[in-house]
Length: 155
Picture (cartoon, one colour):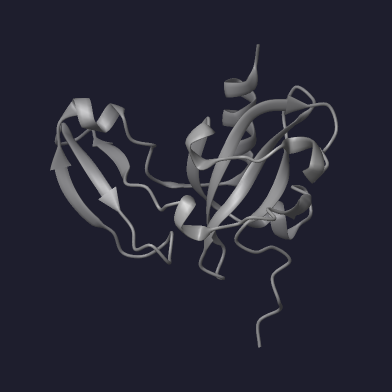
């Protein structure tokens, strides 16, 4: 029997930034096997914030949406700060992602099932314009997320 995970959908967590401080993320989907969809937000905090200090995050206010491996959460490097009190899964959707295929020069919209951020996706060729409006497809490691969020929150 697999151990019980220490996080759940709707949990808010702190992400340590490379230059000090913390960003904030929300677990929007998880498959229970290590793949997580997270929404990340643009306010930098000196310490892991308290849930009460965050106001009410909304999916549309994100600076980054990504699928990532859960090692930062499992190892406690990304501390859970609490559960959103008004968590409603439908307000935190599984978005379509975009991928550019260098070899073929194609732009592709990638859609995962709503319940599993690591499911076999459907893919459709799209325009560059549409591609540029979509979050980047791929499974990110927690170090990549920390580095990317650090860049996004640098002033």
